Image: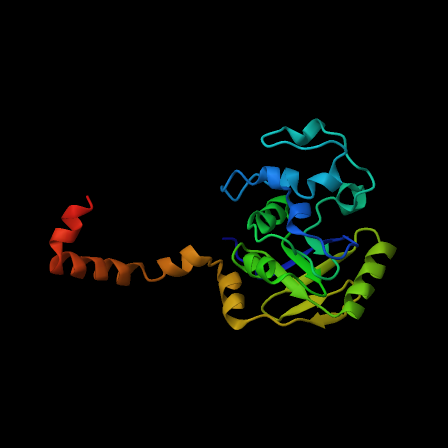
Length: 215
């Protein structure tokens, strides 16, 4: 999993409440569990004018020019501004996979669906909760200034606007540690690889018949 420490990137405003996971990555694209390759189909029904299919080459598909992520001023955006209850709906982990694969590293919203919120941390994506007033301010500033960039400092737990204003956010200490060090569940487990190996050797000596049975 990629580390998340400090980043500066263009912010794209998705001015919708209750964006569900089927909107983030439609159900027909859930056949793969590779964690990669979902970026072209992020917000598929909003980005394109036709219906997308799995394994389809998206380079020639007709674009919805009105959708925010298709507008030239938001090209390369790595910060997504959203409204309340972002990521509601099903528990599909493909939603943060698609956002991360597209290049989004952090989503800022007044609230998130709980399962999506948890899945983000497990996949190197930082979900930030700010007040509705702060999010409203960011939407207005993004709309007023092309190339608007936000800096997100996880260690300091602040979002910094181009004017230098800081907006503090809360994050659980354990989740913060995992993101700063790029540790997903597998990475956390591998920290104890020597202990696991020692336990297996001890178990092998104590019950060799069990290991013989599972060869």
